[in-house]
Image (tube, rainbow, N blue to C red; front, side, top):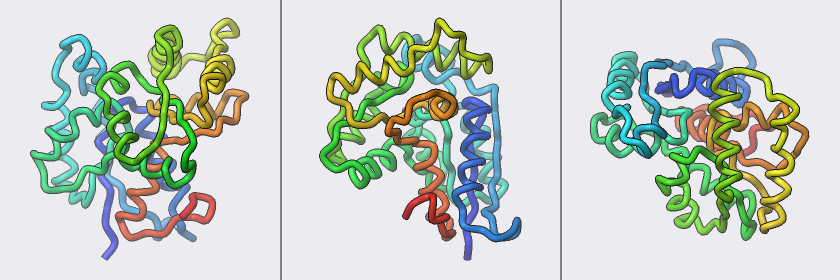
Length: 238
């Protein structure tokens, strides 16, 4: 029997929509009826995860739990979250439910080891994601070498994520530092880039640089499709 997906979303809403699009476009289906049933709670009232981790801001888990209960009531067989930083709270959430919550950093790290054996990744994400060490631990467990941005590079990434993508405003010409950032990381040994904030794949697709990139949102969608017993389109990769 085919299974269903619950998206614990709203972190942010555009990233939630991007995850649904990737599930839909990566699933092998010849008509509407062959797609996966997906339940979504796009709860934009969930407090900022980076603020909670780094600055003692409001705990997002109570509001995340409310959304989780809604997905349980719908009958979701697995739960996924588009927000990388939210995975810091995954152990607390998993203790509150019997529904498996798929772990995006671990899924991504295993995929990196498969696609780029022996190559070095540059890890791009929010300061909250990087300081939790979520990806560090997952990459080390999978045996994937990686490097992190320098402080000034990280500050620009946070500006890109929060002030441009989350604010849904166009990037101004004076803000076009993306290619320079990637070039500097390549100069320090990066062979490819992990877009470990779900806002980054959205903007990376609009900028003139080919990476290569690993998109954790796409890897999470891929894993969820297979978990539910569906097939991937050939272009989604086996």
